Image (tube, helix red, strand yellow):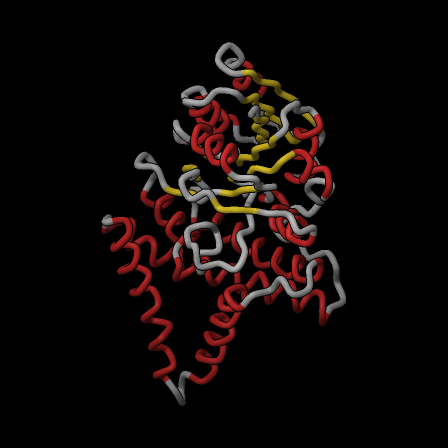
Length: 329
C-alpha cells in the first residue's frame, strides 16, 4: 500500500526539519510527503526542498486558513489511497510506517490514530507537558494511551484515514480548534471504523512555555463546547471534570473563612500528579514540573469550557475562539 503524509505548518521551519529528517529513516518507504505552508511569514520551503533527494516530497505555500483547510489542500494534492496527517512538532520513530502498513494490510479500517510520547531529547518541561496531556489522571486516557474507551477518536497530530472515508465526510471542517475530533465524530456518524494502533506512536514536542501551553488547553476547552453544539451527545464526564474543578475552586475561595478544609483536595491534587509522573517518568525534575503543568492543563481546559458557555449562553455571542494566533498548538 502507498501513503501520502500531509503536514500543515505555520512559522515552524525548525520543527519541519526535524520531522522530515525522521521520515528519511523510515524502514518502510512507500510514501510521499506533502508539506503545506499555511501563510507563514517564516516559510520553510527551502528546508523542505532540501529533503527532495531523500523523500518523494512536494511543498506548497498558500494563504492562511487554519489547519483543517490546509490539510484538505494537502489531500487534494496527494496521490495515494491512504492519507496520514502529522503535526509539524512531531518526530516519527523509524518503524512507524512499517508498523502502520503491517496493521493495515491485516485489518480493514477506515481510519486510525496513535498515541504520543516524549523523546529522551525533549526538555523537562516538554516531558512534563506530555505527561499532562496523556495521563489517565488528567485526560482519562482519551488521547490514545488507554484501551478503556468506548470509541477511539483519532487526532490530527497522528492520524491516518483512507481517501474514500476522507472524501465521504468531506475532509476537515474550517474549525480552527477541535477540527480533528469533529472529523472523527463525523466518521463515527457514518458508521466508519476508527482504531487505535498503540505501537504507532509519535514523539510530540508540543509547546515550550507554560503560557503557550495554557493557551493551547484553554482553546481546547472552547473547542469542546463547539464540538458539543455540532455533535450533541459527544460530551462525556471526563470533559466536564476540569470545569468541575474550577467551580469547586471558586466555591472554596468564597467559603474559605468558614470551611478552610475545602482546600485539602486542591492541595493534594498536585502531589498526586507529581507522584504519578514520577512513577511513569522516573525523573524527579519532570515529576515536579508535572504538578504544575497538570494543574495548568486542568485549569486551562476547564476555564475555556466555562468561558465558552458563558459567552454563548449568557452573552449570546458566537465568536468563541480565543488566542487565534495559536491554532496550530
